[in-house]
Image (cartoon, rainbow, N blue to C red; front, top):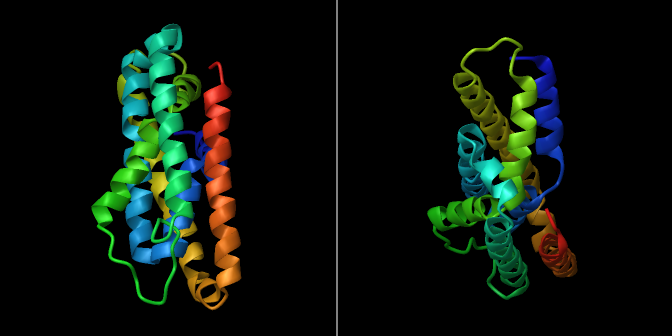
Length: 203
C-alpha cells in the first residue's frame, strides 16, 4: 500500500462533510461515547459505496440518470431531516448537563444512512480506488478490498478524534447557552445547504 494512498485518504477524510458534521454534533450534544457510535455508523455507511465500486455498480449508477436521481433525492430529504433534527428541542444537538438517553445504535444508524444516501460516494470510490492499483495486477479485487478497508479504518480513527474534540467542548457549551443556539443554527444551516447543493447537482 502506497504512502500516496494514505496521504490522499487522510486529506479526503479530514475535509468537513456530512459525516464529520454529524460526529461533531453528537460529540457536542451527547458526549464522547455516543460520538464513537456516530463515527462507527458513518464508517459503516461507506461499505455500500465501496462494494458498489468494487463490483462495478458505481459505473451503472453513473450511467443511469434515474437511479442517480432516486438516491440523490433520498439523500436530500435525509439531509433536510438532519437539519430539522438539530434545530428542534431535544434533537441531535441538544446539550444539557444531564445526558439525554438516546440509543447508541440509533445514533449509529443515522450516521450510516447519511453516507448510504450519498450517491456521490460510490462515484468517488469508482474514481479514487483504481488509481492506487499497482500496474500489472492480474486480480484487482483483493487490492480494492484492502484499500477500501484501510480507508474505512482511517475514517473511523479520524472521526473518533473529531468526536473527542467536540466532547471536550461540552462544558464550555453547557455554561454558555447562547453559544449552543448559534452552534445549532450553524450545524442545521450547513446540513440544509448540503441538502440544497445535492438537490441542485447534476452528477
